[in-house]
Amino acid sequence: MHDPAEKGAPVTIDQPSGPNEAGTSAGAGSLPFDTTVASQARMYDYLLGGKDNFAADRAAVDAWIKIDPTMAFAARANRAFLTRVIRYLAGEAGIRQFLDIGAGIPTAGNINEVAQAIAPESRVVYVDYDPVALAHARALLTASDAGVTEYVGADLRDTDTVLLRAREVLDFTRPVAVTLLSVLHAIPDSDDPYALVAKIMAAVPSGSYLAISQTGSDLLAQESLDGLADIVAQMRLQPGFRSREQVERFFEGTDLVEPGLVPVEDWRPDPSTDSAGKSILWCAVGRKP
Image (cartoon, rainbow, N blue to C red; front, side):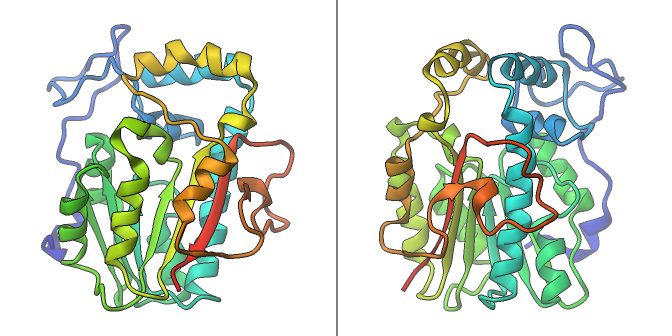
Protein backbone atom coordinates (compact mmCIF):
# COMPACT_ATOMS: atom_id res chain seq x y z
CA MET A 1 0.00 0.00 0.00
CA HIS A 2 1.24 3.52 -0.69
CA ASP A 3 2.00 5.89 2.13
CA PRO A 4 -1.27 7.70 2.97
CA ALA A 5 0.76 10.87 3.31
CA GLU A 6 1.24 10.75 -0.45
CA LYS A 7 -2.49 11.07 -1.17
CA GLY A 8 -2.26 14.79 -1.80
CA ALA A 9 0.93 14.56 -3.87
CA PRO A 10 0.96 16.47 -7.16
CA VAL A 11 0.53 14.75 -10.48
CA THR A 12 3.83 13.04 -11.23
CA ILE A 13 3.86 13.20 -15.05
CA ASP A 14 4.56 16.37 -16.99
CA GLN A 15 1.27 17.87 -18.10
CA PRO A 16 1.21 19.54 -21.54
CA SER A 17 0.13 23.11 -22.03
CA GLY A 18 -1.95 21.63 -24.84
CA PRO A 19 -1.51 18.96 -27.49
CA ASN A 20 -0.29 20.13 -30.86
CA GLU A 21 -1.73 18.88 -34.14
CA ALA A 22 0.47 15.81 -34.05
CA GLY A 23 -0.84 14.96 -30.61
CA THR A 24 2.52 15.28 -28.89
CA SER A 25 3.18 17.47 -25.90
CA ALA A 26 3.47 21.18 -26.45
CA GLY A 27 4.75 21.63 -22.89
CA ALA A 28 8.32 21.72 -21.70
CA GLY A 29 8.59 18.06 -20.69
CA SER A 30 7.98 14.99 -22.79
CA LEU A 31 5.27 12.55 -21.75
CA PRO A 32 6.12 8.90 -21.04
CA PHE A 33 3.44 7.59 -23.42
CA ASP A 34 2.29 8.05 -26.99
CA THR A 35 -0.30 10.81 -27.11
CA THR A 36 -0.91 10.18 -30.82
CA VAL A 37 -2.76 6.95 -29.96
CA ALA A 38 -6.28 7.35 -28.57
CA SER A 39 -6.83 5.93 -25.09
CA GLN A 40 -10.15 4.54 -23.89
CA ALA A 41 -9.75 6.22 -20.49
CA ARG A 42 -9.02 9.62 -22.02
CA MET A 43 -11.80 9.27 -24.61
CA TYR A 44 -14.23 8.60 -21.77
CA ASP A 45 -12.88 11.64 -19.93
CA TYR A 46 -13.56 13.78 -23.02
CA LEU A 47 -17.08 12.42 -23.37
CA LEU A 48 -17.81 13.35 -19.75
CA GLY A 49 -16.54 16.89 -20.26
CA GLY A 50 -13.10 16.38 -18.71
CA LYS A 51 -9.84 18.08 -19.72
CA ASP A 52 -7.40 15.20 -19.29
CA ASN A 53 -7.31 14.15 -22.94
CA PHE A 54 -5.34 14.79 -26.11
CA ALA A 55 -6.02 15.56 -29.77
CA ALA A 56 -6.02 11.88 -30.74
CA ASP A 57 -8.59 11.08 -28.05
CA ARG A 58 -10.90 13.90 -29.13
CA ALA A 59 -10.55 13.02 -32.79
CA ALA A 60 -11.44 9.38 -32.11
CA VAL A 61 -14.52 10.38 -30.11
CA ASP A 62 -15.68 12.87 -32.73
CA ALA A 63 -15.27 10.26 -35.48
CA TRP A 64 -17.08 7.64 -33.40
CA ILE A 65 -20.02 9.96 -32.73
CA LYS A 66 -20.45 10.56 -36.46
CA ILE A 67 -20.96 6.81 -36.90
CA ASP A 68 -22.75 6.14 -33.62
CA PRO A 69 -24.43 9.28 -32.22
CA THR A 70 -25.47 7.39 -29.05
CA MET A 71 -21.89 7.30 -27.73
CA ALA A 72 -22.17 10.48 -25.64
CA PHE A 73 -25.43 9.32 -24.08
CA ALA A 74 -23.90 5.90 -23.37
CA ALA A 75 -21.02 7.51 -21.47
CA ARG A 76 -23.38 9.53 -19.29
CA ALA A 77 -25.68 6.56 -18.78
CA ASN A 78 -22.74 4.37 -17.79
CA ARG A 79 -21.59 6.93 -15.22
CA ALA A 80 -25.10 7.16 -13.79
CA PHE A 81 -25.23 3.35 -13.64
CA LEU A 82 -22.01 3.37 -11.61
CA THR A 83 -23.54 5.73 -9.08
CA ARG A 84 -26.71 3.66 -8.71
CA VAL A 85 -24.78 0.39 -8.43
CA ILE A 86 -22.47 1.69 -5.70
CA ARG A 87 -25.41 3.13 -3.78
CA TYR A 88 -27.08 -0.27 -3.95
CA LEU A 89 -23.95 -2.19 -2.98
CA ALA A 90 -22.92 0.09 -0.11
CA GLY A 91 -26.49 0.61 1.04
CA GLU A 92 -28.90 -2.26 0.52
CA ALA A 93 -26.23 -4.96 0.06
CA GLY A 94 -24.00 -3.74 2.89
CA ILE A 95 -20.72 -4.07 0.97
CA ARG A 96 -17.71 -2.29 2.47
CA GLN A 97 -14.95 -3.34 0.03
CA PHE A 98 -14.72 -2.39 -3.65
CA LEU A 99 -12.31 -3.47 -6.39
CA ASP A 100 -12.78 -1.28 -9.48
CA ILE A 101 -10.87 -2.60 -12.50
CA GLY A 102 -10.49 -0.29 -15.48
CA ALA A 103 -11.20 2.72 -13.29
CA GLY A 104 -10.33 5.40 -15.81
CA ILE A 105 -9.60 9.05 -14.99
CA PRO A 106 -11.18 10.34 -11.77
CA THR A 107 -14.18 12.59 -12.20
CA ALA A 108 -17.14 13.65 -10.07
CA GLY A 109 -18.95 10.84 -8.26
CA ASN A 110 -16.08 8.36 -7.97
CA ILE A 111 -16.75 5.04 -6.25
CA ASN A 112 -14.96 6.05 -3.05
CA GLU A 113 -17.03 9.25 -2.83
CA VAL A 114 -20.33 7.43 -3.30
CA ALA A 115 -19.51 4.45 -1.07
CA GLN A 116 -17.86 6.43 1.75
CA ALA A 117 -20.75 8.91 1.83
CA ILE A 118 -22.94 5.93 2.79
CA ALA A 119 -20.39 3.93 4.80
CA PRO A 120 -17.29 6.00 5.70
CA GLU A 121 -15.31 2.85 6.56
CA SER A 122 -15.50 1.57 2.97
CA ARG A 123 -12.23 0.47 1.37
CA VAL A 124 -11.78 1.06 -2.36
CA VAL A 125 -9.04 -0.16 -4.71
CA TYR A 126 -8.88 1.26 -8.24
CA VAL A 127 -7.00 -0.55 -11.02
CA ASP A 128 -5.94 0.93 -14.36
CA TYR A 129 -2.90 0.95 -16.63
CA ASP A 130 -3.41 4.29 -18.39
CA PRO A 131 -0.62 6.62 -17.14
CA VAL A 132 -2.83 9.71 -17.12
CA ALA A 133 -5.50 7.88 -15.13
CA LEU A 134 -2.91 6.67 -12.63
CA ALA A 135 -1.29 10.07 -12.19
CA HIS A 136 -4.59 11.78 -11.52
CA ALA A 137 -5.79 8.97 -9.28
CA ARG A 138 -2.78 9.39 -7.05
CA ALA A 139 -3.31 13.14 -6.84
CA LEU A 140 -7.08 13.28 -6.53
CA LEU A 141 -8.48 10.10 -5.00
CA THR A 142 -8.68 10.56 -1.26
CA ALA A 143 -10.36 8.54 1.45
CA SER A 144 -12.69 9.44 4.29
CA ASP A 145 -11.09 9.53 7.72
CA ALA A 146 -12.45 6.05 8.44
CA GLY A 147 -11.99 4.51 5.01
CA VAL A 148 -9.21 3.69 2.56
CA THR A 149 -8.78 4.62 -1.10
CA GLU A 150 -5.89 3.09 -3.03
CA TYR A 151 -4.89 2.61 -6.66
CA VAL A 152 -3.00 -0.11 -8.52
CA GLY A 153 -1.19 0.33 -11.82
CA ALA A 154 -1.95 -2.95 -13.60
CA ASP A 155 -3.69 -4.50 -16.60
CA LEU A 156 -6.72 -6.70 -16.03
CA ARG A 157 -4.93 -9.37 -18.04
CA ASP A 158 -2.23 -9.46 -15.35
CA THR A 159 -4.75 -10.90 -12.93
CA ASP A 160 -2.16 -12.22 -10.47
CA THR A 161 -0.77 -8.72 -9.94
CA VAL A 162 -4.25 -7.22 -9.61
CA LEU A 163 -5.19 -9.73 -6.91
CA LEU A 164 -1.85 -9.52 -5.11
CA ARG A 165 -1.99 -5.75 -4.85
CA ALA A 166 -5.69 -5.69 -3.97
CA ARG A 167 -5.04 -8.06 -1.06
CA GLU A 168 -2.71 -5.45 0.44
CA VAL A 169 -5.78 -3.28 1.04
CA LEU A 170 -8.85 -5.54 0.98
CA ASP A 171 -9.69 -8.49 3.24
CA PHE A 172 -10.55 -11.33 0.87
CA THR A 173 -12.21 -13.29 3.67
CA ARG A 174 -15.00 -10.69 3.58
CA PRO A 175 -17.27 -9.83 0.62
CA VAL A 176 -15.86 -7.64 -2.12
CA ALA A 177 -17.72 -5.84 -4.92
CA VAL A 178 -15.81 -6.23 -8.19
CA THR A 179 -16.72 -3.62 -10.80
CA LEU A 180 -15.72 -3.91 -14.48
CA LEU A 181 -17.53 -1.01 -16.06
CA SER A 182 -17.05 -0.30 -19.76
CA VAL A 183 -13.72 -2.12 -19.85
CA LEU A 184 -14.27 -5.71 -21.01
CA HIS A 185 -14.90 -4.64 -24.60
CA ALA A 186 -11.20 -3.69 -24.63
CA ILE A 187 -10.29 -7.33 -23.92
CA PRO A 188 -10.50 -9.48 -27.08
CA ASP A 189 -11.64 -13.10 -26.98
CA SER A 190 -8.06 -14.16 -27.69
CA ASP A 191 -7.17 -13.02 -24.15
CA ASP A 192 -10.04 -15.14 -22.72
CA PRO A 193 -11.84 -12.44 -20.69
CA TYR A 194 -14.21 -15.08 -19.25
CA ALA A 195 -11.28 -16.83 -17.59
CA LEU A 196 -9.95 -13.51 -16.26
CA VAL A 197 -13.28 -12.61 -14.65
CA ALA A 198 -13.75 -16.14 -13.33
CA LYS A 199 -10.31 -16.06 -11.70
CA ILE A 200 -11.07 -12.80 -9.93
CA MET A 201 -14.45 -14.02 -8.72
CA ALA A 202 -12.91 -17.30 -7.54
CA ALA A 203 -10.61 -15.25 -5.28
CA VAL A 204 -13.42 -13.43 -3.45
CA PRO A 205 -15.74 -15.10 -0.93
CA SER A 206 -19.42 -15.88 -0.86
CA GLY A 207 -21.51 -12.75 -0.64
CA SER A 208 -19.29 -10.85 -3.07
CA TYR A 209 -20.72 -9.04 -6.09
CA LEU A 210 -19.79 -8.59 -9.74
CA ALA A 211 -20.95 -5.53 -11.71
CA ILE A 212 -20.27 -5.26 -15.45
CA SER A 213 -21.18 -2.91 -18.27
CA GLN A 214 -20.12 -3.92 -21.77
CA THR A 215 -20.65 -2.65 -25.31
CA GLY A 216 -23.29 -4.83 -26.93
CA SER A 217 -22.71 -6.02 -30.48
CA ASP A 218 -26.46 -6.57 -30.75
CA LEU A 219 -27.16 -3.00 -29.62
CA LEU A 220 -25.15 -1.60 -32.54
CA ALA A 221 -26.34 -1.65 -36.12
CA GLN A 222 -24.11 -3.70 -38.44
CA GLU A 223 -23.19 -0.63 -40.45
CA SER A 224 -22.04 1.04 -37.23
CA LEU A 225 -19.92 -1.98 -36.32
CA ASP A 226 -18.32 -1.91 -39.76
CA GLY A 227 -17.73 1.83 -39.59
CA LEU A 228 -16.08 1.67 -36.17
CA ALA A 229 -13.42 -0.79 -37.31
CA ASP A 230 -11.03 1.91 -38.53
CA ILE A 231 -11.43 3.98 -35.35
CA VAL A 232 -10.77 1.01 -33.12
CA ALA A 233 -7.72 0.12 -35.19
CA GLN A 234 -6.31 3.60 -34.53
CA MET A 235 -6.70 2.89 -30.80
CA ARG A 236 -4.64 -0.29 -31.33
CA LEU A 237 -7.41 -2.34 -29.77
CA GLN A 238 -9.04 -5.59 -30.80
CA PRO A 239 -12.57 -4.84 -29.64
CA GLY A 240 -14.58 -7.43 -27.80
CA PHE A 241 -18.08 -6.16 -28.52
CA ARG A 242 -20.42 -8.90 -27.25
CA SER A 243 -24.04 -9.94 -27.51
CA ARG A 244 -26.44 -10.14 -24.59
CA GLU A 245 -25.89 -13.89 -24.31
CA GLN A 246 -22.12 -13.44 -24.38
CA VAL A 247 -22.24 -10.81 -21.64
CA GLU A 248 -24.43 -13.08 -19.54
CA ARG A 249 -21.65 -15.70 -19.58
CA PHE A 250 -19.53 -13.45 -17.35
CA PHE A 251 -22.07 -13.96 -14.57
CA GLU A 252 -21.93 -17.75 -14.47
CA GLY A 253 -21.81 -18.86 -10.85
CA THR A 254 -23.63 -15.75 -9.59
CA ASP A 255 -27.26 -14.87 -8.94
CA LEU A 256 -28.32 -11.82 -10.93
CA VAL A 257 -29.79 -8.94 -8.97
CA GLU A 258 -33.08 -7.60 -10.33
CA PRO A 259 -33.70 -6.42 -13.03
CA GLY A 260 -31.08 -8.77 -14.45
CA LEU A 261 -29.16 -8.08 -17.66
CA VAL A 262 -30.44 -4.86 -19.25
CA PRO A 263 -29.14 -1.71 -20.98
CA VAL A 264 -27.37 0.53 -18.46
CA GLU A 265 -30.10 3.15 -18.47
CA ASP A 266 -32.67 0.53 -17.45
CA TRP A 267 -30.87 -0.82 -14.35
CA ARG A 268 -32.90 0.54 -11.42
CA PRO A 269 -33.24 4.02 -12.95
CA ASP A 270 -34.07 6.96 -10.74
CA PRO A 271 -35.66 10.31 -11.62
CA SER A 272 -32.23 11.99 -11.91
CA THR A 273 -31.12 9.58 -14.63
CA ASP A 274 -30.90 10.95 -18.18
CA SER A 275 -33.48 8.83 -20.00
CA ALA A 276 -33.52 10.73 -23.29
CA GLY A 277 -31.81 8.06 -25.30
CA LYS A 278 -30.79 4.44 -25.70
CA SER A 279 -27.29 3.23 -24.95
CA ILE A 280 -25.17 0.53 -26.55
CA LEU A 281 -24.15 -0.96 -23.19
CA TRP A 282 -25.44 -4.10 -21.50
CA CYS A 283 -25.08 -4.29 -17.73
CA ALA A 284 -25.88 -6.49 -14.77
CA VAL A 285 -24.98 -7.12 -11.13
CA GLY A 286 -24.51 -10.64 -9.81
CA ARG A 287 -24.05 -11.97 -6.27
CA LYS A 288 -21.72 -14.90 -5.57
CA PRO A 289 -23.74 -17.38 -3.46
